[in-house]
Image (cartoon, rainbow, N blue to C red; front, side):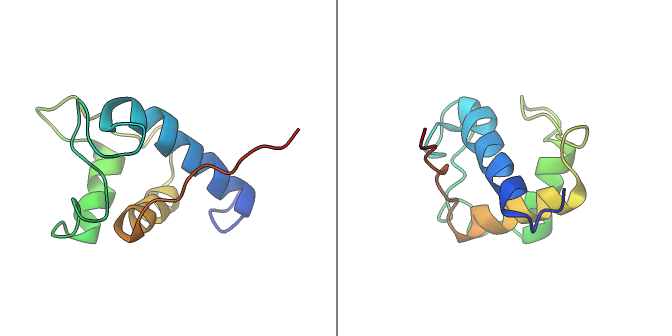
Amino acid sequence: MSVTDPARQQVLIRIVRQDCGSCHGMQLTGGLGPALTREALADMPFESVVASIVHGRPGTPMPGWKSLLSTADAHWIAQQLLAGFPQEAKVIR
C-alpha cells in the first residue's frame, strides 16, 4: 500500500500516535523521549528526522523502525511531524 493512500496514512498516524506516543507522549509533547512537535523539530534537518525514524538514535532508547516502515513511510512521517502531526481519524461505528 502506497503512502499516498489515505488508508496507509491513517495506519502511519496511528503508529506515531500510539507507538511513538508511548515514549514521546500521546500528544507528542515529550515524555521519556523528547517532544516531536513542529516547534521542537524546527531546527532539525529533514533528513535527520528521517534517519532517526529509520535507524533510531544510538545511545538512546529510540529504536530504528526500518523493519516496520519503508523509507517512503519515514519521509511521510517526517513531513507530517515538521508540519504539525495530524490527529487519528475518529472511527464511527
